[in-house]
Image 1 (cartoon, one colour):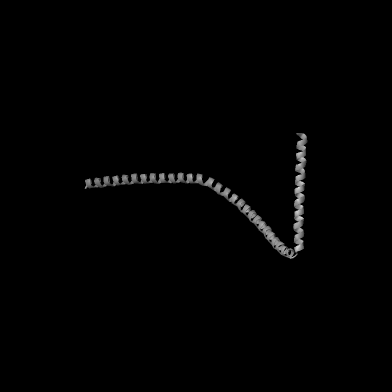
Image 2 (cartoon, rainbow, N blue to C red):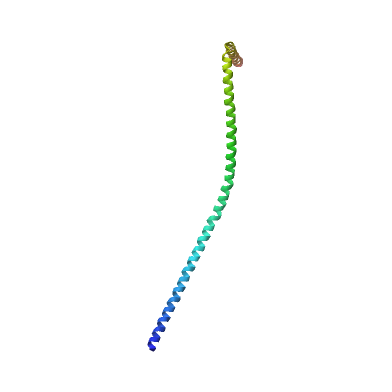
Amino acid sequence: MYDLLVAVTVLLSVTLITLIVGVVLYVRQVTRGVREMGQTLAEIRKEVVPLAGDIRYVLVNTDGLVSTARTTVESVGRVAGSIERIVEGKTIADAAGKVVSTSRSTLVSIVEGMKEALKAFRAAKVEPEQARDETDEAEG
């Protein structure tokens, strides 16, 4: 019976030692996992902080882009208004042209006036060229 008691005590001691070693190894694994998670979180923090700065910069630039887009839309609106006024003016000019086309004598007078204006411009253009040629001949 004494041998049985010694055998049970030895068996319990070995089991207890195995259990203690297992708990120590488990705690070391958990500690290593926690340390690795801490390192991972530190790396994430290193990446997130600059990323947050970049996001802040992008948001500030987005405000600028929205402002620029708003200004562009306003400019396009002004251009569209100008085009609309030009088109309305063209409509008025078309109507006036129809009124003028009924009066042949007015149109003939306008054409004759344009012919005379072209002759005058040609004569004015020829005179400076002749004067320049005469100056060149005098210098040469």
